[in-house]
Amino acid sequence: MSSSFQAPKGISEYVPPRADLFYAVREAFAERARLAGYGYLELAVFEDTNLFKRGVGESTDVVSKEMYTFTDRGDRSLTLRPEFTAGVLRAVLEHGLHKQGGLPVKVWTTGPAFRAERPQQGRYRQFYQLDLEAIGSEDPAVDAEVIAISAGWYRSLGLTQVRLLLNSLGCKNCRPAYRVLLQEFLRGLDLDDATRERIEINPLRVLDDKRPAVREQLKDAPLMADHLCGDCKAYHDRVRELLTDLGIAFEDTPTLVRGLDYYTRTTFEFDHPLLGAQSGIGGGGRYDGLSEDIGGPELPGIGFGLGLDRTVLALEAESASGGQGPAFTPKPRCEVFGVPLGEAAERRVFDLVAGLREAGIAADMAFGGKKLKGAMKDADRSGARYALILGERDIADGVVQLKDLTSGEQTPVALTDTTSTLKERLSR
Image (tube, rainbow, N blue to C red; front, side, top):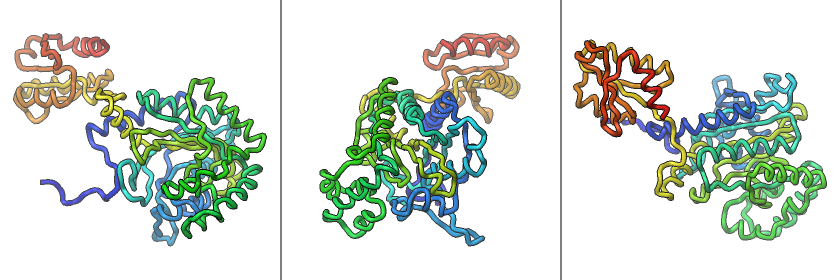
């Protein structure tokens, strides 16, 4: 009988064995970030609501429609984080990381984020992201590094159908004139009242509208790429050159805007065609004015948020479409499974398993005094390559029976040589 309680609607939960893939994908990213010199942050899950209103932008759907906001017992308005960048920048400023020298500040974090959206495949109310930020440098090489880390991570997972879309949204010098030009164009379209209000607040957000009827009218809209100032064009060309030097393929996408107000200059998104309507699996960009927007000093930055949920879905989709095994397989939770036959054997197997773990070998064992047949079923279910079977006669002989669970071959091994023998066999 199961519990009468269920997880709230729209929550992405992971249980074994699928959770093993989720965890391994996350750990693969952690290693990529570490190799590039990014330190880990552990952040608050909720923040002052005004941080997101000022940082993300009140005209965005995230702030106007999707935030989980509540008033606490101190009559403070708090919001579960709908994204990471504003909170990361807040933490960098609050703890003075930008004053410690060696800019840019290079940090990454991960965890759940929350948006009150209509749940569907790949779109959840509680979802998981990997966030990486480089704060304090306005250098095209930093932009290229950030993009390269994410592209390299996708590649390391074995994903082959990921597309990198790239654009520039200009700066405070060239965007105002483009904004006026875009507003004039948009005012002539047949749009609903809410969208018309958005034209006056942040017209670039209209370009991010996903409704087919609106997108059809936007086909002839003026593009920021055609109105970049000289500095922005040179900056964007340099980013493109550096990515090309690294062999990272990208598609120039002048219609790419993304959904948050703080983006400037470099903007990018990773897309996976097998995920249908929710094909975006990650993205980010530069946000050179965000620090000032939340009351901090002038501090340029660039970063991204990569969707863990959608990356797992992309891995599963590529596996299903190719008719092969998964492109990326997590390390096994169990490599060796202990099967004790009797009370005395249980104590010895318990010691053996503990020693294997100390040696870096994933090991488990049968509990509860199970007979051989039941314990071997547990061994098969564990996914282990080898079973260690130990009975009273084996103890007397100073050996343990090492069984290959794939071939069925079984050989006695001296108890004192168990760990070294398994390390050698598992390394083949």
